[in-house]
Image (tube, rainbow, N blue to C red; front, side, top):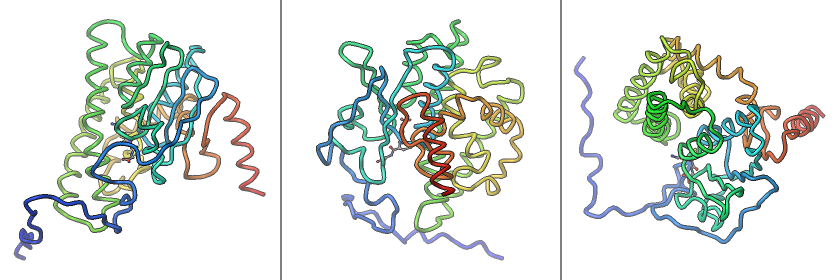
Length: 296
Ligand SMILES: N[C@@H](CCC(=O)N[C@@H](CS)C(=O)NCC(=O)O)C(=O)O
């Protein structure tokens, strides 16, 4: 059978692009071509040194896992309040949030233990800042540190192809465009293979030590491998990546990871969610309350 040709004349870009608010797109109420705040809204501040403004997406989970790992390792200075930012309601465009993150994306973090308080945006910057501040989850020798930072920045550079590229066109776009899905499925499979080869002969991403590279990579690539985001495990045949799956399962067993993945999670089964976290005991009480409410 002759191959169907792509219609290359379907869209001719005009000389100047214009914003058309496309109501078919599930993100049309929050996507816009300009930055800056849309409304005045101060952010709440709790009692702990760290104030996190976030949502339990993979980018948010990186930071809550890191904070929970630090607390589990005995770093009391890592105590934090986690406030919920609902990105579908446009909370990321409030004036207080934009003052912390001019890029209007979760997560955003304030460190109130410094004078003046330190603002942080970009999850990779937060992981590195916390690792350096508490001297934890980052190898101390030059070669180990270089390896760890290489993988950390690999994650930050690669995940947009996975989320904004593959995830968008495979799961969210109003029409399935073969060209886009092919392009990003190929790239995501290549990235999964990069990780699988690395993990074939290393327990963790950087060797035998669990580091911020694992904390950055797991929420995205572990979730895709297990079919937890985009429902694409079969499409991408992720069962082929056996070393990646071994590592994913191993990390999922860590108690701090189990706590971190619940924080600011606003979907799924009630017992998997902790909308806001202000105290270590919230994991017990709120979870119990939710289970009771769900089963009442
Ligand atoms: N590179 C950023 C990405 C952050 C990001 O894309 N956050 C998304 C949620 S996962 C967001 O806040 N989107 C809201 C928007 O685009 O308006 C990071 O790692 O911190």
